[in-house]
Length: 88
Image (cartoon, rainbow, N blue to C red; front, side):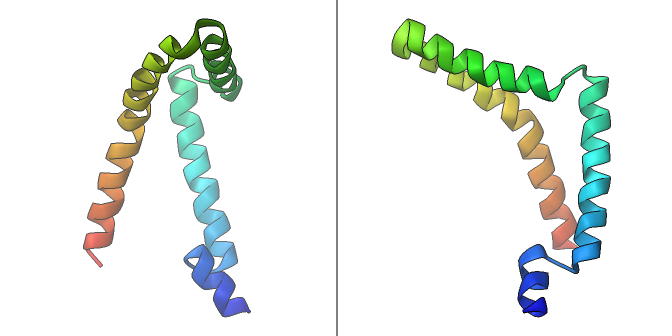
């Protein structure tokens, strides 16, 4: 079972916890520097669904905004991960 857990986590439990702590610290620092806080993100999601309910499907146009906003973070992270895994 330990081997299955390690395979699922991509390494040992301790190693995975350490990696998650380091990445969480870095992302937290970046979000704090950008003055973005988890509650702001949560309220943004709540506001989106509230607008969807109030304005109907015209609010779906905001999905493009969310798509671009998320892609600004996701695409560079994906490229970095692919570059780092290519070296192995």
